[in-house]
Length: 188
Length: 412
Image (cartoon, rainbow over the protein chains, first blue to last red):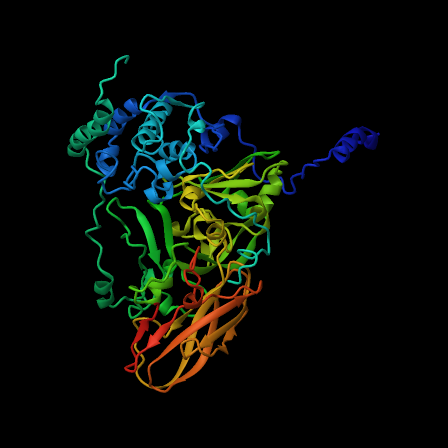
């Protein structure tokens, strides 16, 4: 009787192509959907986790003043103790890689700028900016670096679509496998 | 909003300058004070500690005659002007064996970080994303799971010898090796059940900047370790207490400290850490990923002084992100001829390996070098033959022994 009742379940498990590994130890608990949402601050290049909200460069300039970004990064994104936020002058046709290791110009995706402001800024008050403020600051930095127009509105739709100068101008990482040399054919 | 003043663009860029100046007056950057009560190590070494005191019997300390310390690395002090810890380097010139004492293990952070003070009873690790069963673990629960203990080095990508550097601490100190204990990441991922298409993980720390790195699933399932133990005790705060990730053989930035969250995803997530790791050239990118075969002589090394001609045991460390070190050679004539060094103890995979070489110095100027080969057959390069070493620098380190016995960095 017992085995008969189990039979449909066993067939179901055996028949599935992606036979899920069952938990071996049963240690740990299942987080609630709310817990996952509260912890999950990752933003992918496609922007699927981006929250509602929006901002422009003009609004961002005000947020930049109000939240004391300038105190560390300098009044216009340069000249402070913290890393500079605007590209170096290298001429209009310069390779984007020549403009400095500066997040809002070198990163292939504008989502990285949003993500980093959201998780790591401002110092001592990380995580306190609203989504609108993060969109606005992102817009401001992208505008300062001549990546977007002054009146461009950044939101969950537009941000992942921003054409960063390095969008397709970076080397993908090797498809790593165990026991692989660093670079096939390279002796060192 | 309709009619735009022609100089508005200029105003926006200058307006912040104006207001920023005001802001600067109102809000000072949070610069931390240097603790006034702290004695310098030199001052401490003048005091004779009571090694027989109840306090030092309860928790021991080293002799006051042993004064080896970490130093700032990478051209920025630690703590810096904001009080952030940036990069520090291990005193490899004083190292013996292969284990770096926890208190001397190098500690690098990407942006600079405040070392968090985490109550392990409150700490949690969450695994979620493309998994069948998202899971949250307490530290107690993680310690119930099957554990692994092994030696592994960690090395920062910026561990590059430069001509103006003097000591091996400056040229190579951003690597250390410890005995790590924890749960295999694969155990946790299998417990959660990775869904089809889960090809990357994003690992994230709990520190104020919540540093996160993308790691390929093949590596996550191979040998990554979620560590709570280091050198026979709990992982220390500067190394990620109570929980940190170890990604053996990969560049240091992947080894997320204060680990709180692992998200299984289907693409490279281009986090701030990932972005900082980008290269333009594919070969450069590949060579900046898994650490290459590398070795360095720690004695005699730059800044040291040989008292005179005669016998010396030359000693050094070798390691590779590609596996175990299979061979170390030493040259005492500037690379013209090479002789096998002796590997001391067992050469563990992705771990510092101690090598020695018996040498009698005749008192004339010469140059010492070491080069290693790993289990994949990768050989440490001579930068004078290779030209520019791209990616992470694993080139041979030459030390010049002057006729007066002084030792110098001979990088050209």
